[in-house]
Image (cartoon, rainbow, N blue to C red):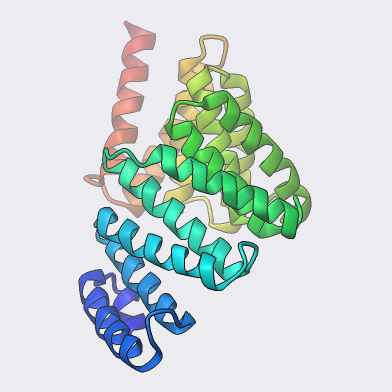
Length: 269
């Protein structure tokens, strides 16, 4: 039942059920049982999904501190709890709270443990590397983030393949980082790879594919040395497909139409 509630996005109801389960398990198994800690983390994740990050942080901290005492630092469940707390701090940062610094510190600790225990190229290590890079980007530490994204992408290309969704997401993240640095040629190269993969995996008219087309066009527009003709062609294709798939009044369709209008004004004006 709880799984169904989560799938339909009713996280408030899921939190209520998780809290009820936690109360029962605490009475039966005790405060420090692994099942109790798992229930605590379930409640925390339901809180995070609702944007209740401070509550989530308190619960994830409770779980992590107890796991660190009961289990080894290198235990998979301890590492997972550290990652969950890092994500909660990141969510708090997204809301404007002071969470990014603590998030990056936790992800750094997690990353170092995973490198030592699992190896540099393990999927979990690479995932944490990408998450750390993302938080560093949010802190404005773009050069550090770019270096991590580059290392992560290099390994993901080899291990997961070009068309894996995680590899594609890392390309998007690195493209966003390069965009902030004004490295538009590299942005175009990465987004073209993303677009080719998304067309193959998702289809030419999938909303994600259309967003990538729009982002690619923006990169062309930003750099005066790149082709505005190609940008216009991309936007026209994107707009036609957005109207067909999403509708004329969808925010993504309106955003694409606005970018195309601004491009036409810049060229003709």
